[in-house]
Length: 231
Ligand code: SF4
Image 1: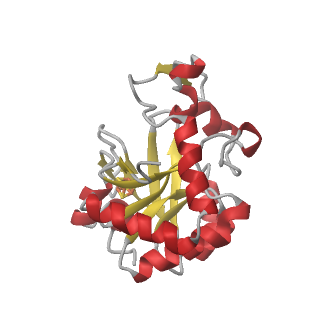
Image 2: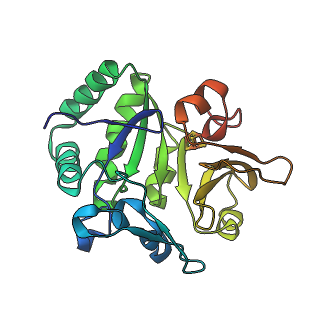
């Protein structure tokens, strides 16, 4: 394996295989909607998929050319390394590659997710990297993993399907709600919406900002997942 980390949203990303575990992926907590709208699954040229479907209204958009740059087999290789090699070896490799990339921000699950069986190991890696001063952000749908991850970082968001679910959570954590219609993600801190990530349109409500997704820029400006409300 040549590389463990790949550029993602201006930082270094960890890519795991996408899809449900029964389809050889790591998205154990995926909703039917996100599976339909997932570019990594549906823009796979090898499988002949060329469209992403909006699960809210059935409309389709063409996949961008070359969106699926890291194939499924490569992602499996990266995942196997992280899950099977000794934790210290994985952490050492990540630190080494971050230094090579001149980047101190690691994005968890640029693709895929943390499966239940991998929670303890991934948390151990996150803890180690946190002690080394690595900033860690990203999205997960695994609630128990997310609840534990806040011991080390407040920049990993729990993805929920609706604002209603955010309200029900009654916590001040970081949440992400996909907006399938606009192909963006709403970022909430507790019940407050304060960012729309990935948008390049104007949103009319006051207090809501829109940004093109670039985590490094967010970190430098203390915006998005890195606003002053976070750790
Ligand atoms: S809001 Fe900023 S930090 Fe959060 S995912 Fe989007 S680009 Fe990255």
